Length: 548
Image (cartoon, rainbow, N blue to C red; front, side, top):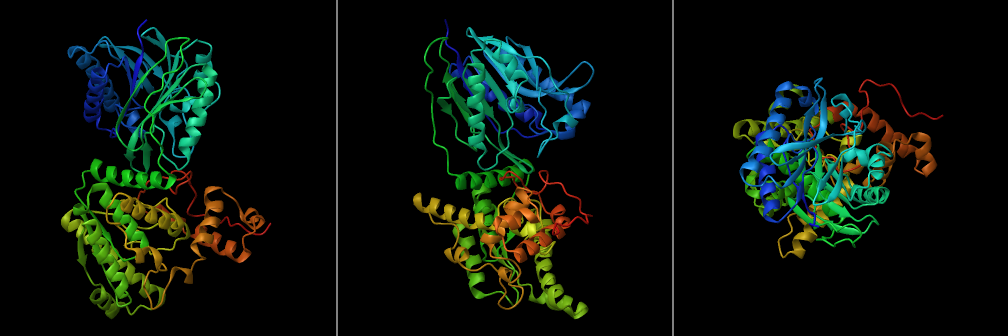
């Protein structure tokens, strides 16, 4: 009896790049064949990229996906790899023209089997019921005398359905094709679920996942295999390409241990998710460089460090835009930051521009403060138009939640916001982690210590700090987590023991800032609930959390 050698191809496709994704699949098939694999499995929708949203409904796109599948089958056969069984995700179409989220099995130069995803997620960031039809039939294939059941992503998250069908069909392996986005802590949930499903079918479970950034989603990879008894057999690292090889045991034999790597800490995974999302947004959309305002504060410092890690410091432009209220230490920290990461550092004072506007408008108070902030946004967009940079925004989730940012300023303008789903308390944690990581590897920490330690301030008036307008960030983030991510109302927050005045103030700020959030750039989702697809509230909305 021959041994089933399984290869899980963890790859980073691009939505709509069907030719590029096809080349990527063929390249990994060649590597798997060279490694002696019997079966190579790719993630969900790898041919088209994922999620494809309404592209699924476009007939020209459907035809291109079908041609790509035929090309893969023909090329493998022509290159002498027809005996390699390839399982991959793509866009399928029924005879009635209904699109499916589909897995195809290629062997011998042709498509030998098709499986259509049963459970179509319609919550959080997912909207699959809108574009896909649901499958009904189970799929079992045979390779090296092993019976392999195939399902797609959400099919294992719902009780019943294809997993329950396969449990009665005596499979030797459950193969799961996935496009599962990253969020902190989700890896533990996935592996616990996989262990339950492996026990349910009485066979090992192999989980292959996408990695890479797609707009506001980041896929983390972390492909793995667990035995029927839940034992950890093999896994791939996160946020990078991998070809995970594993020799399945013969029926009745003990499971075979494969390669195992340690999981990164939560802080490292969040940091890498933000960097991955930013890098792929830049690269997949064809930008050459990044520009951002560097104020000397912690948010712009961490964002700049992420930008340098994503595409290299030499492709990052940091612009200091001091006003008459900017402190010398902030200017020094901005210059130090750019030197540490190797960025192009520029200084563009805004005082002459402020004076010109004030000569016409004579603004006072908040209007004058906002004028300074918006002029910084104008400068960055002008440099973007002139030199072709992508402007990125350094604002964080706490500021976005409370509306503590001037709309169209340097903190909220641009095409991408790496810290959009990272609250202020986490910003400090990630900055400290990044510096410690550099020191542990014998490199210069990218973020000046003073940027981490000094009180945060917009520096739009003398002596200003964030806590003039907001509760301490540690307290604020606790309230925001309860109200935003857990949807707790006023009564629940007070029952937790939060001060009534703090609750009233935070809820008022959050509810009034929805219009700002709608205009904020995309940013990578790293928590269970990010602003954007996860949380959809009306802007015109008179509902308020009042005393009951």
